[in-house]
Image (cartoon, rainbow, N blue to C red; front, side, top):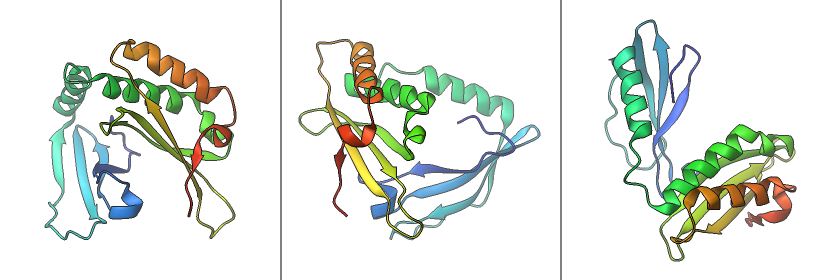
Length: 170
């Protein structure tokens, strides 16, 4: 995330399940002039570790490190590449928002069979728990990851996502 003056709370650490279940580590990231500030740390897990005070970084160095990290992809396995590309495509499409839904995550799954998991919610009436949906998409090692991401995106974006995903029981 490239910080701006209006940036905000970012998850910097979370469990394998989801922040709503087991908590997560959040920090407020903002740009202030030539500095990037990390402040207002929040740990919502049951582990009560000491949190750092505000941290600050040179904005030019911070931007250069973000660009370097974003380009450092040789470690990716096919499910990582598919998750990254599919997630970017779904976010950029605005598709879920058009159905009154929020895309929560697209991530690689290393459990057999390896693949990609996607999760989204649909808000119901104020005060009600949101409806939760998920995708489990198998990834192969034989088909190029880029082709798999395009195929999954085309299938998801072709119809109402609530009709093609599995709904979680509340």
